[in-house]
Length: 195
Image (cartoon, rainbow, N blue to C red; front, side):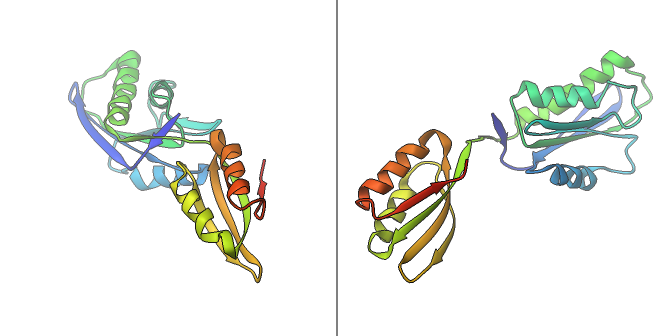
């Protein structure tokens, strides 16, 4: 699965109607709602949208005939294997009726073109780990964590005996990274992983 690196927009005219799609990454349902509000235009005839955050998704036809706008936008997100993404497609009516099939192609096609134009990044599943490291091994452990692909150190807290590091480890490599920490500290470090 992939998400978007940053917000992207695309405009096209279809039978005299103007369509503008704006797509961007969102981390939660609340962020998706905020994204929709920020990128909707009250002057547009329709502000149709869809978003997906893991297994949760929503879409809106915003006054277009049922199933002709929001659902095709969501289908564009799903076809491109995207997650944690929101898309709003604005339409200014140009006087030519598109019909339900034409509307679906216009909204879904504009959303898909915008999403294809956006820079995508792979979503790497992670596990949160809490790592206690004695001061004597701290420099080596941090160097190895920094060089390990996909590891994100989120926090460090110092105690009298050492440092507790909170990090996100890529799930696929988590056990190897834990073993590496145990080996280089000669079992002086302790690692707890949240399941």
